[in-house]
Length: 51
Ligand SMILES: [Zn+2]
Image (cartoon, rainbow, N blue to C red):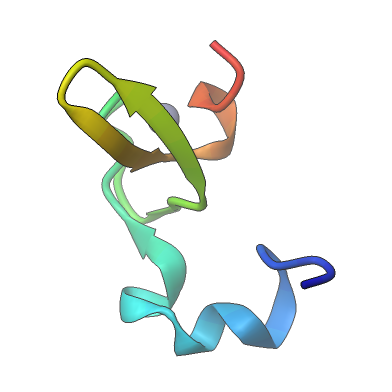
C-alpha cells in the first residue's frame, strides 16, 4: 500500500479519484482523503485534509 494516492492506482478509482470536494467546492479535484464528519466519512481534497 505504498503511495496509494499517486500514479497508476488512481486510474482504478471511480472517475480516477477526481470529483468535487464537498468541503471547499472545488471541482475536478482529487478526492483522496477520508474526512470524519458528524454524518460519517467523506472524501475531501488535499487542502481540506488536515483541518
Ligand atoms: Zn476541499
